[in-house]
Amino acid sequence: MKRKRAVKSNKTAVKLNCSTFTDPAVLYAAVAQLVKKATSWKVPEQLDPFEMDKFITTQRGGSKAKKHSIVVVLDEVDQLLRLPVRMQPTVKEVLHFFVRWAAVAPHSVKFLGIMNGVDMYEQVSRVHVTDENAVNSHVPRVVFGSYTHQDLLLIMQSYVQSALPSGADLTEVHKFIEPRAIELIARKVAARDGDARLAISLLKQSARHALQSFSSLENNSTTQTQAKVTMRDVFQCVTSMLASPIVQQIKQLPRQAKVLLYVITALSPGSNDNNSVKGSFRQCDMNRVSEELARLRSQPQTAWVPRLSREELQTHLMSLDCYALVKQGGSKSGNKASRPAAAMSVRTFWTTKLSSCVSMSEVSRALQDDTSLSQLLQL
Image 1: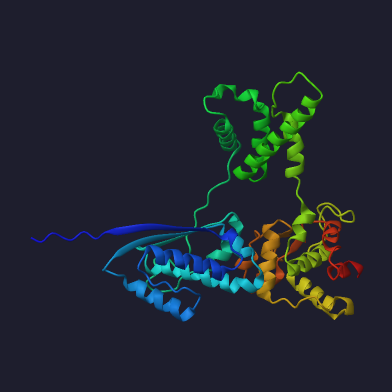
Image 2 (image 1 turned 60 degrees about the vertical axis):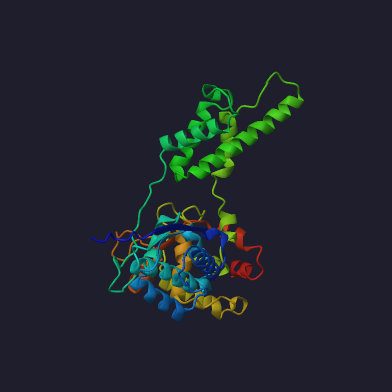
């Protein structure tokens, strides 16, 4: 009997961070170049729909000459979804290509997208495959829960121990940082969003604050022999780092999103506005928002206000919702759970109640430095 010839399998991981790219086409070209270096596949170098379809067709049949196994890993995919509206069709084209490729050649290609914004998954989930050979028509999702207080405590303790000089006694950590200080950071961050990176940042900032305080005390010839992170240092940093920089956040929004936030806030004042009654502030819907945008365009001083399509409104509303600047309520019937704008039907999108999570004074401070946007405040 003839022995079956073993087929050599070459496994390669192609990993890129989407936050380092401002153009999805450049991201695609970088992935294509890395794949071509690792395999004999003739991946299209540019976003050419005809060439990409042709490549997918060849991949569907597979190649018996030489086997390759590729895992394409894109980290921080949510950064692509925050790019300007004009780039979103290209973003969808890039993601759709990778999803299709992995669907038609599941034994050769795996596509893994990692994102921080769980509620932005609905936008990615629209990128699905309808081919009859697709294993699953929807993008599967794995959700990792945020870190608990105990998880963060262990992570920070391990981080502090790894920062100690070699040969140091690990039981002497309390000489450099109060156990209560680490405990406070863990509880504060766990109550917020459970982000380990934020916890580490707070720990570092607290250590810097302790060093600065120690340096100033040392100049005054005190008896303290070394810097130590205390509860006081943590309190100082928690106050500054965990305070929500709303005005700065609004300033970083795209121009169109700023206009949308202004209109929603004007029609439905935030609950922290002085002129709103707590728990009973008004709500609006996208119909009213669209009407108000049309009214602004009819005014001579605000004729520059853009005419936004429904897709553009969806994208900007989703960004505002993701950053917790606006809140989506139920429909007219009442108690339906809110859904991201991208997942809504046309009817639901126009009728879902909206309320602003920021005050008009915060919006005004963010817009007042822009000459044209500040004209909105004078109406």
